[in-house]
Image 1 (cartoon, rainbow, N blue to C red):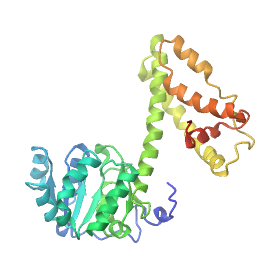
Image 2 (image 1 turned 120 degrees about the vertical axis):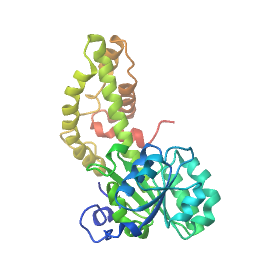
Image 3 (image 1 turned 90 degrees about the vertical axis):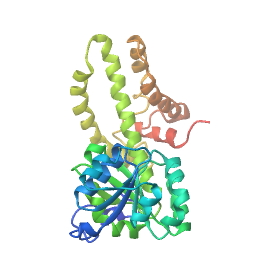
Image 4 (image 1 turned 135 degrees about the horizontal axis):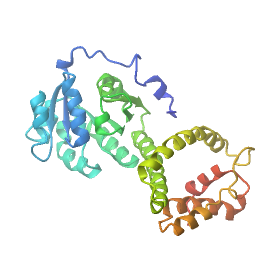
Length: 313
């Protein structure tokens, strides 16, 4: 990924100066708050690596397997925080993070907090400001993986916030996934996370729309998936070209498919004839129509980003 601060290239995963020697794993203390599917995977990876890991979960029973592997279960969140200089939170949402941590602000002072709970960029910035006021080093993380991928090739976690905290704990973070730092703005990791996941969900919705269109014809989704996967993979090769046009700001450069040619009216009609909702494709058509109505019909398809950047009143 491209990092606007330039630091991702310097602090990416692999053999780089930022990696710490973790041969003395047994001397590293870390506490993990939240043992859902993802929190449990993160904690389990640390335990297996030999780190002295304290765990806590609001509901009972979630820590049993980790304790059997060598983790220590804390009786309360406060006890877990006091057990380690490094505290990881992987809770349900932003509100749950504040609910758990606000009463513990005094205990957290002087410690490092790494929050990998899914939060909005502005919420991450709020947490960073709260932490800074309390003397807590704060690092925010966006996890680009499902729990089963943690500790495996292909997993990625994006970080922003305290660069000092990232450098200090880089080797530990690398146990989970490829770790990349995006700058001091604590909201950037979340922003990248949301942008990537938005792309994913829209792609999935498009696939499901196609599967729904084919279903009345007796075509199973599994057969459609066999066709869609290589097609969509091939189409990702177009992203760099679209990005070049968008960054250049000129939607008239030669070689682009025009907005007028991209009219999706027939797709919407075909969906109705199949008896299925056209909502996923209708959303794209609305973006196209706004630019055509504004007089840009002969310009390239990439111009729909202007409809997204400037929402309709």
